[in-house]
Image 1: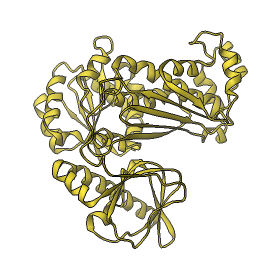
Image 2 (image 1 turned 120 degrees about the horizontal axis):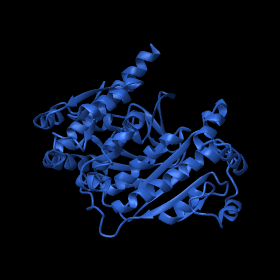
Image 3 (image 1 turned 135 degrees about the vertical axis):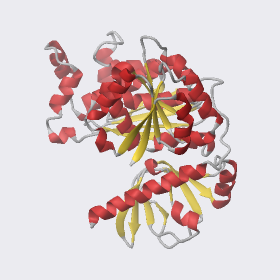
Image 4 (image 1 turned 45 degrees about the vertical axis):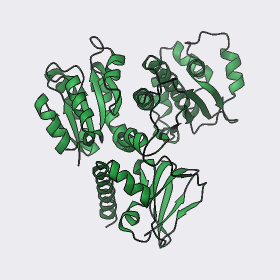
Length: 431
């Protein structure tokens, strides 16, 4: 079982958190440890090694500035993600995000949304474990940053998915804080569009009629999802950043739509009207917005703020980037494990003696690490299930990075322990 730390001394906030975790909290496989005194924070973060920290940014006793300073001073503390909890009636989210800018802040959540959204936030982050380490890995090891979500037809959860990459861009200095809300709203609208019109197939006329009878988009989507075939559809949301720009892609499993026809219908209406709002908002905040021919995939680019970027990573930025296509073999069983691979994007199947025994995604972060570390031959064959991107890391580069950043030993230990635990669970299930 993993560990989540709650840095908080406020009883009212603690009550909200407990209520959020009361239903379903035990199912996430993590325990929550409360740190209610400032002098205990550093010790707990250093030695308990939580993977996720929920931090009350408005705590009356524990000073946010003091905790942030402690984390900045010790790089051993950087291998966890932060969910910031704050009171929007008294605190400014932009100011708080700026104060925590160089820390691994994943999500900011207002007190009023703790009961309804906190457990969902935690679940999304845990299911996409690589997000916790993405900032540190992309800062130190690789040049590009990427991520992906497979989103269920839950429109209420969409702002959480949209918030994570946008918050990360602000933290990295790639996006001005005043632009955060606009981009987040644009992403949310486009993802909701993909759920509403794509997966659920709600037409312009159906939506108009539903709205006229007092129904919301949430109501319409829930009604459509009573059909199991619609309910199982998902939206794939991906992004990839380099020094200059971030490209977002949103793809649904629907039949698509006539983009030109929709643009003509909505050309003369208010940008915030119910129909076509997602496209119009995205065009206000993004560049190069385009749909595929079918109309079930939209992509757009956000160019980074001038002067806000990061330094060139000192780790594996010079290593070879490979882009295997669907069906490509990455390495084969029995060959020498001379390289480690950082998974930037893609899905891979793992085969042992001709039988599929597992799969790998960006959530696994690396592939081939066991034979690489032990200087052994590969125990399995790995094949790409789709177009992918990998960083091929040599033994020399890996050793040099470990010399410069020894705290990655803990990071790698966690990674290997997590994979071993998953392997044991799979074997137990098959027994």
